[in-house]
Length: 111
Length: 111
Image 1: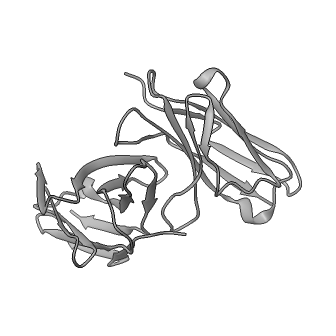
Image 2 (image 1 turned 90 degrees about the horizontal axis):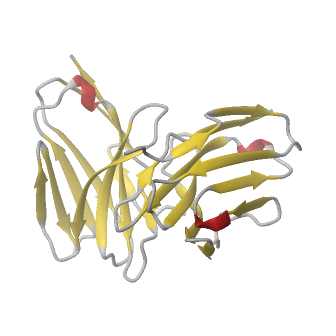
């Protein structure tokens, strides 16, 4: 069974540029999560989806971040415009119960 | 904000030795989970312990939970070089599958 797939794995952009991350969850998992992990820290939840509905986006900086999960499967997370402080690893996870399965993450560097 | 604080922040041991990591949290929980993260990779679920459990085993892993002290420990017995990774505790509250991660313990096992 394929795991959670994320792309790209790495992204380097200049500040004020837009960037997008893509996630394909494990087949059959209705719940999808986006986390941000700063260097030396644990992941922090940005947004959680149940099927195509965002049920918890309280930690998502809505002025510059947006996300969507069309048809309740794949999801994209977008930052526009990116700031220096957005440099981090962006992790996607999916679950069908209490255990979350994580993708390898996208490492973003904003210059 | 992160719920858990882990101790120690970093741990170095020789192969064959045991490694113990501790996690403290602040609010009531439904369950506590431990995850492993290899360098540059996503997180892998190790073990889940519920609030009404005190101890749980999985292979070389032993987890304890003391809800009165709001703390948990992860013991890895007979460590191997392949156990080198960062270990995170994560707590889940009642009526939610939202996980709040700790700051992590970086474990280095020398051959």
